[in-house]
Image (cartoon, rainbow, N blue to C red):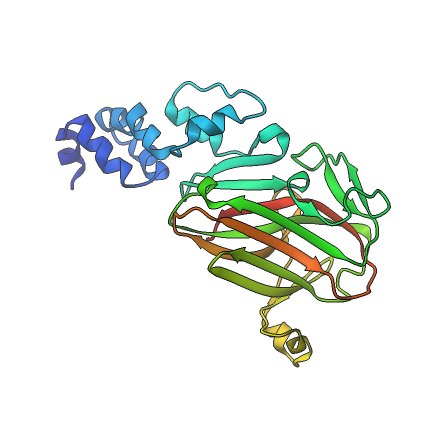
Length: 275
């Protein structure tokens, strides 16, 4: 449809057209002409782009959010905001128009984290959360997060990432394979990771014996990615949210070896649409 023909349509029709595109397309269209801009910035359109439960999300914010319009609200929600007493962050992926979350370390189940001989809870300036968990020394490492799929965008493939830093004193995290597990009911994935300062090898295996298969890990090696916020992340796995309600478990663990480990700083587990 030509630009001129689009302008001849009633505003509610133009809104319907843009609602089937994306927030980015609507922003670009608002530069075309005054007539199209009115539709592209209308409250009706931008409410369609907002999550259906956005009022509930607003009620869970740690700090009240001021906004001038639904478009302004959408843009402010596209940046991570603390919710649920500061134990989670929420934001909208403004390109995919999907919901994203990070569960803080306090929202995770970390074996022995209440014992100060094994874990230390402390404020950490680079973190968006009030505190992080730093591993002092353990032989048994088990970090698990859970989320209900009703909190996520339906019909979307999500990936879960453990967000960490490795302290200068970090040791033992690549001495023995660590398991990474996603359990989403009928969808399950399992892999192996060796955390290093520069690289994280993830091998998707059927049995632990395959760890010793020559070249297997090299062919499946992935980088422990540096993030823009200064942290690092390792993918735990992915799952498809078909819209049905179920609990997803995300886990990193090593409970079989007798290797002492320390120096892992945990910020949380992030869930975002798989790109």
